[in-house]
Amino acid sequence: MPLTYVGDVVRATIAACVAEVANLGAVINVASGHSTSLSTVLDVAERLTGHPVAVERVGARAGDVPATLADITQARDLLAWKPEVSLTDGMKQQLRRLKESA
Image (tube, rainbow, N blue to C red; front, top):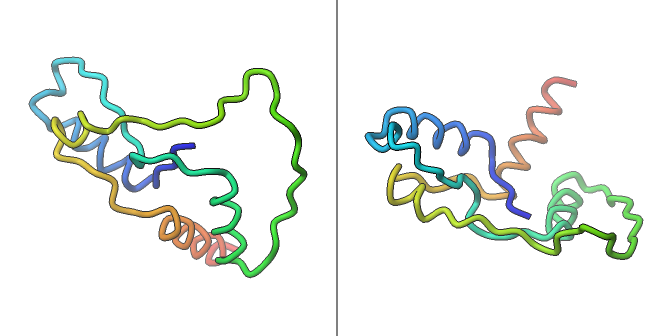
């Protein structure tokens, strides 16, 4: 699953608004550029919170997509954009904000 930190998406959106190619109607993928398994996300969540994540494993279901990956070449080439926040750092920031608002 491609996971992208919201701040990276905002930067890409701003870059698209000011880029000369914005008026060309180009479709540009904004993503992390690599696929991340749900197991990895859960592992990071457990490590950051110090609490186990309860998981009920079920078999594949009709229509399940085993993996996704967005090609971000055009974002790099047309917008000079690339993701800057890793999964772990993004989850750390989100956890910090949740704790601050509690």
